Amino acid sequence: MAETLEALRSEVVACRRCPRLVAYRERIGTERKREFRDQEYWARGVPGFGDPRARLVAVGLAPAAHGSNRTGRVFTGDRSAGFLVRAFYAAGYANQPTSLARGDGLRYRDLYLTAAVRCAPPGNQPSAEETANCAPYLERELRMLPETRAILALGGFAWSAVKTAAGRVYGVPVPPTPFAHGACAPLGSGRPLLWASFHPSPQNTNTGKLSLPMLVGLLERIRGAYAGPAIGPARRR
Image 1 (tube, one colour):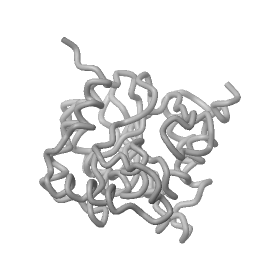
Image 2: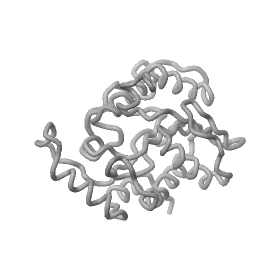
Image 3: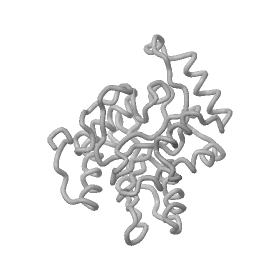
Image 4: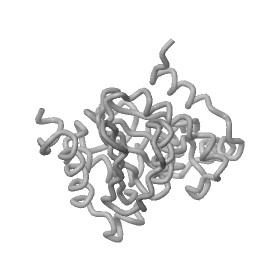
């Protein structure tokens, strides 16, 4: 029987493969941040979210402790998410410029968003073993997204994870292309292009290392490579 994205999402939510990550995500969900003390934290694995017929797949590092680990939706409820979704909206991939909570009406068109690691790691630093435990989830997602024409890695960690996953999924050598904002690694005829961006973390966006025009421009460049010119926000379609 063919595997489905919904079945994979259920598996991610129930996953307890990494004791350190399970303990951390659950402790954060119990202790909570003061501004969210009245909210119930998700505190489980966070699945991918978006259009199952997407031509663009974007991959981050892992859920933020008080972002996706709280809300249960990838890149939702923190400053990184706020920046990223504004860019997706401006480039025409999102129907609204905010990502605050599950059920807030956000929809992605032609975009599927996921992460290399599915549980919030202490200090945003998953171990090599934890990363390896999560790698099959990304590989299986890529196999279930047959329309993929481009894969965007958000940050150096995701870039390494995506290159490895794509090499396995598409049966090609891992591209040697080094990480840099706007870097592109072809996988060969008929296969997706791999792209890289600086991560939309406050450390990068507050310092100007990554600006909204930079990320929107890259998203439009990516679309242009697989589908022609950008056509504006999704709400205008």
